[in-house]
Length: 440
Image (cartoon, rainbow, N blue to C red; front, side, top):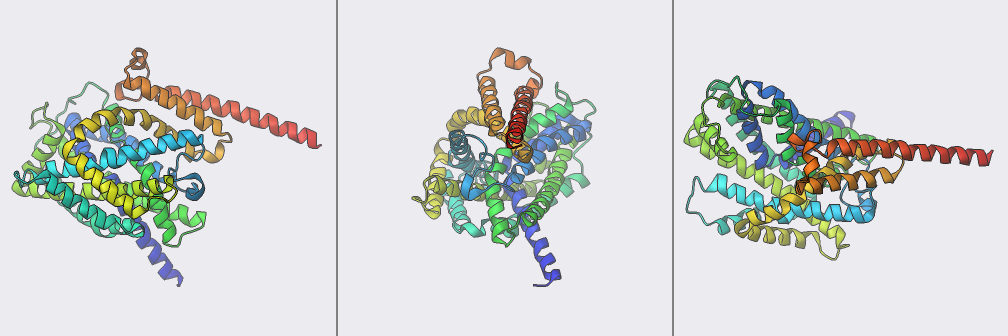
C-alpha cells in the first residue's frame, strides 16, 4: 500500500473511531444537561459551558486516553486498574461495569427512548414490546465483536449527527427569545457548568469504552505505540470537536429560552418544549430520532464492553455472544419493571466510585512519572472514603472547598496524592542511592 493510500486509510479510520467515541459518550442525558445549563445561565452561558466542557468532555476523552499504555491481556479490561491492588481493581471493575451495564445504564437507554421517543408519538404502545424490539436491535448490532465500532461510527453516528445538526441550526437561525441577563442560579456560573458536566459521569463510561476503542485501533493494523497514540489522539479530537459543537449549540438554544419559559420547568420537559418551539410537531419527530440513536449507540457500546468484561472475568467460561444475549435479556426486564428502584440503589454506588475513577484517570495519565503503585492505592482509597462520606452526608464534608458543586473530595485527594508521590519518590531515590553506594 503506497503512502497516499495509507494516509487515506488513516484519515478514514480516525474519523470512524472518532464518530464512534462521540456517539458512545453522547447518551440521552447529554442531550438534556446542556440546554438546561444554558436555560439556567442565560447570557452567561458561554462561561458555564466552558466549565461543562472541562468536567465532561475533557474528562471523557482523558478516560479514553488511558487505554494507550494499558496491557489488556495482562492487566484486564479496565484501563485504570493496572496499578492498583488486584482486589481493588476487581471490585472497581465489577461495580463500574455492572452499574453502567445491565443494572442501570443499559436498561435506562431503552426506558428513556420509550419515554421521550415513543410515548409522545404512540401513547398506547406497550413498553415491554418496545424494549424487546430495542434490545433485539442491540443484539444484532453487537453480536459480532469486531464490527461494533465500525457499525457505530459508519452507520449510526452520521444519522445522529445529521438529526442534531438540523435541530441546532434551526434553533440558532430562529432563536426562541431573548437571553436572560441575570442567571437563575445561586452558584457561580462557571462552577455550575462544572457541576452539570460532572453529573453526566461520562468519564466512567469512557474508561469502560476505552478497551473497545483500543481493540478497534489494533484490529485496523495499528500495533506500535506511536501509531496507536496518533490514531487515538486524532480520534479523540474528532469526538471532542463534535461534542463541543453539539453541546454548545444545545446550550445556546437553552439560553435563548431563558426569558420565555417558567424557571421551574424540569430538565426533560425543557428539552421537549424547546424542540416543539423550534420545529413544532416535526420537532417532536426529530427529537424522537435523536434520542433513539443517542440511546442505541450508547446501548450497543456498553453491551459490547460489558459482555467482553464478563467473558474475561469468567475466564472464557461464558462466551461473548451468550453474554450479549443475557445482558440484553436482563436489561429488557429491568427497563420495564424496575429502573427507578435500581437507580435508587445504584445512584449512591456511582457517587462513590466516580471520584475513584476520576482520580485513577488522572494518575494513569501521569503513570510514567509515578514510580510506586502505593500512590494509586492510597489515592483510590481516600477518594472512595470521601465518596462514601459524601453519600452519607457527613457534616464536615459540606464545609470543604468545592462542596457546593459536589466535588468536596477533590482537594483532600489532591493533597493525599501529592504527599504520596513525594514520599514514595523520596524513598525510591534513597533506595537507588544506597544501591549505587553498595555497587561502588
